[in-house]
Image (cartoon, rainbow over all chains, first blue to last red):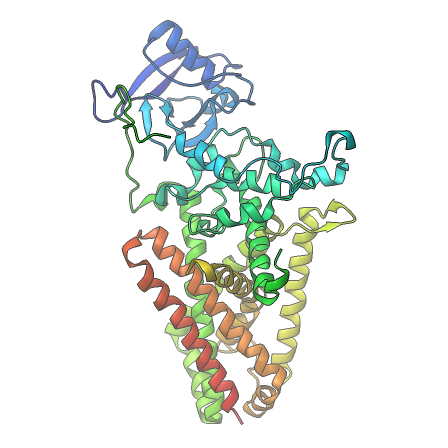
Length: 247
Length: 138
Length: 115
């Protein structure tokens, strides 16, 4: 059992360099430490200039996504012990602009989430006096998996289509759309169909499946996308054959 | 909203990595994905071979015999063997991805993935047996 | 192009399914078992009777046409993503789907004209 392990951390300081570099830090090895613990040790004891995002440190906020040895991971849920003997490479998430060190700009990601109208859409809201919308456990089960997304953007960082086609709406956004489409209380499937069936919507996806592989909450965005492709295609056929009944 | 110019005080220079044309060699799973996609070329090859066989059948017994003879030549045997392996790769990856793409619900509960896979492979066996039966009767 | 993408995807899916279920056995027999002598290929008169049947003709049309559309759609995206040929996207689409259409037409013509 080693007493220290080396971290090779990507640095990018726009005020002094034009390209990212790597800096090596020797951190204590503890078998219960995660990468985030090591990064916080670096910031507290070794190099206060290192910048990175984190918050809940328990895998529910989605803030601490970074690449560890080339794979997008939540650094609060990735143990040093799995990467012995090191050195462990820590880099910012792929396919997003790097602001500084390990911090990336997620504006595009957030914008796309908003585009799919992630709220319950109803033709007419029930008046308060009529009480709540009822939903059986089976109805909840149809969309529950897709509701577990913590918006960590690891899936975008794994998706080669997002890398090649930055306008691709992306896995998390489509899974989020499905979360609402499959919700029995929602009546907004048609409204979301328009944005999703555009050129940069679901049809860009070629089912690589990397998004599902890296998702820390097992949302299975790839599955959500393929299921939605079938729904959208069926809807297209129906609107072609029965144009008057397309609603 | 008025047409005021929007400016950002001190916008830092973001770094954007360029995606190389060899992106698919950077990770094993990406390379496997590209191989899976390229099986479509070999699928097209099988379709073309069948088109060719169909034409031979239409032209008479000599043409059919020539087609069969051509299939025996070493270049075609090699091509057919490679194509068979890649078509098999396509079939297995395709059948394995079905549970993710198609959710079947029976009486409110989702049919488990293993059941869909079992159904797929069973259907595959049955259809293959049926085709073999028809082709081996004469 | 965006308006018929659902149709192209449905053809791709159907073609992939046909290829997945039926191509392995067909190729195993026609490409390996018969030429290598493991099994005897069907005699010409049997094949001729088989192909004369309308059900067989429909089967062969589906067997040849749908996998060609599967290839067209998949190969088009592979060229677009893999080789990043974005500037040729329209040409690639026309060549791929065009080739699939030609193959389908050829199959339909041959199946129609076989006596």
